[in-house]
Image 1 (cartoon, rainbow, N blue to C red):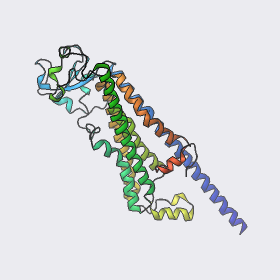
Image 2 (image 1 turned 90 degrees about the vertical axis):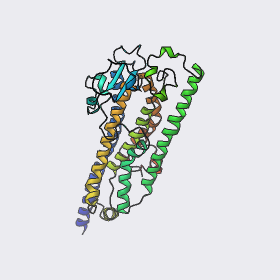
Image 3 (image 1 turned 180 degrees about the vertical axis):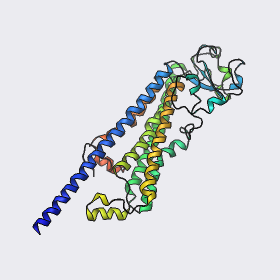
Image 4 (image 1 turned 60 degrees about the vertical axis):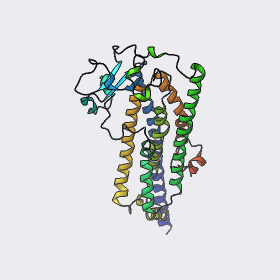
Length: 359
């Protein structure tokens, strides 16, 4: 009996050590993935700024108002002008999208700067990612899938609902403080520095007559400094919300209530998930990973194009600096062993740091 008891204890110790080793690898993966997202996002932005060459900023115009001879092709659906060009004849002053360009699915700049601005038209959600409600709903897809599985498994919803509330608060901090608040400060700064209107006059704006009707009421539309609120949206809302749910799923995949009970009774992690359906065991993980990867791809694409075409380098850097108000605290929450009580409170207790489980 003593020998059998000793053998059983050794097996449990080996099983526990294996589980701890597996957990340590997962912890490392969590931190690596968060760091990889942070570095990749910054590199994509800086590459777009490099392609922009520092001095270009494009605004959409009415293609029909461009004089003949400046555009080729049978039709033109979109056109843009560089607000810092001196005239329409300057290199890269006018970019336009022909039918061929609109059907081009290239993702990165292949050396053809003039046409790449048109290249995302057929990618699902790529052109609507910054609109409402897409910017709020699309990053929540992995969370909604986790919630669906929890409902099907009849497991406790407390932590997942806390996590959902935390993400809702995070998105509203981005919208109300980092966007509306800083936009108000920017307008106040402009009003104090230049008055209610720009110091340029209409004759300085060679492109004034090309603008869309709702843009013509502002002289030299686009020339004022305007930090990139889209960069704040991408880095302080879409990417963190997506990655947080992926990290939770990696560390603690959903299990059925029966499987969880079996795990507690048998003290064996190998029994987890045996009673889950094919939908929950295979399709949901594929949907979570697939949605995170695809949304990251089109987000990076939008970041790159924003930096390459729609904002100057300083405008991008100010927007990125504002986004750090969210990126840095969330990164600390994920990668450091402190703030364990905060992780528990916001439903992120599954994420551990520095090889230490936060209960």
